[in-house]
Image 1 (cartoon, helix red, strand yellow):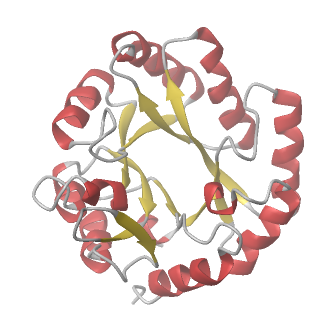
Image 2 (cartoon, rainbow, N blue to C red):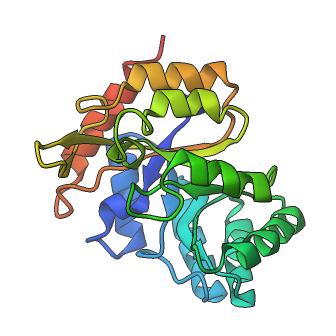
Length: 249
């Protein structure tokens, strides 16, 4: 199967549901069996508690493929993120770096990547966030690669504008350096404000993006993310899964 189409879901979609057993049921309900777990559903500084969470998903038949999005600031305590990912058998962490600390944090993270055999993908998060535009991302990946690459969040990539933030172009330009994907879609209002929509029904060229990922040999972690309707996200996520399945064949 194409890695781009071997996707799961980001646990943040279920942020209003704190019981991981319930989240696991909802993951299966939408039609997938893989998850990236965020800090809403786990304390990554509590390894014993994390072991229980890993067991909940494992018993439900849900694979933890990644954790995050975690922020690395150069603190030794952040090694716990790698320990937790390894306990779950995950081989990816989605992350942010900060302007003030990235020169310290990146070498530290590279060392942990090598120690644990885990890749880190820098999550782009729009024009207002450090690491949200391609020039900065290329600089950070240049400092941290090959252990550190890119996690393309398609909606936040588009938020910086169509010239710099075209996910299809990013899939081409960062080919070989893309370790994670968040399939997310926005519709933009006249004032530039965004709202979530079912993936492929908004601004994102979903088919073209997946095709370019495949062309570039993408082999990383992929999840759907839909942030609207936090009280009842399942119906829209079911539609997201249907949109992804329509690309097969």
